[in-house]
Image (cartoon, rainbow, N blue to C red; front, side, top):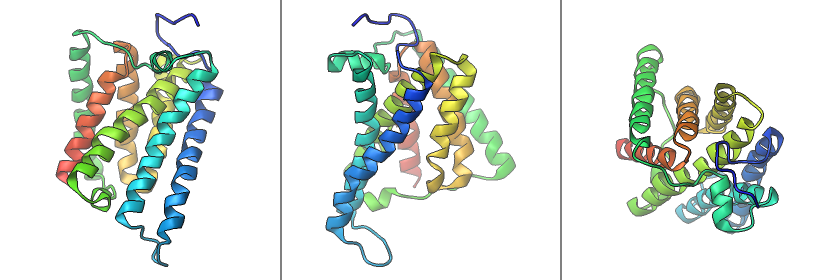
Length: 226
């Protein structure tokens, strides 16, 4: 396979990228079904801690495995090549100013949004995962890595092949935000802004790793604040 040395590294298009997101959701649901069946929750629908953790892990696996499969379907032969296609690449010190700019842009948006509409309310799911180490694993590590591979590496990368930068960033961010609507509608606009900024950061730095770092930082702050 000939490797792309310039952005975008993805060699699939918008259709495959959007279908990939839907498949990732479907795979996560299918993988989580056994835990729900075994748990056999009461009529209230509340799952046990173990089942909730299993369902969250299944969701993360869906967001991880499907992007790898898409990269493989479009010619990547090894795990390393798949990850490269999805933007998991080294980045240099020049990425640091862009990371700081991304943080600043998001903080400004969040401050303006909160001043106008009030602080966004999002469902507190951390306690349902049990102990703090498990919360950190799922919220501050698994979710940022899998979501950046899916929404920036696969989705934005595929959209970027046929769309201008800002349009591709906006579409990927709208999908990213919309899929978090169940955790709280008021949190969707900040998440859209976050996804938009991370997409631009990916293109500017040539790697999704800076976005993963910022995503981990954001989720860690949210976890501490809950």
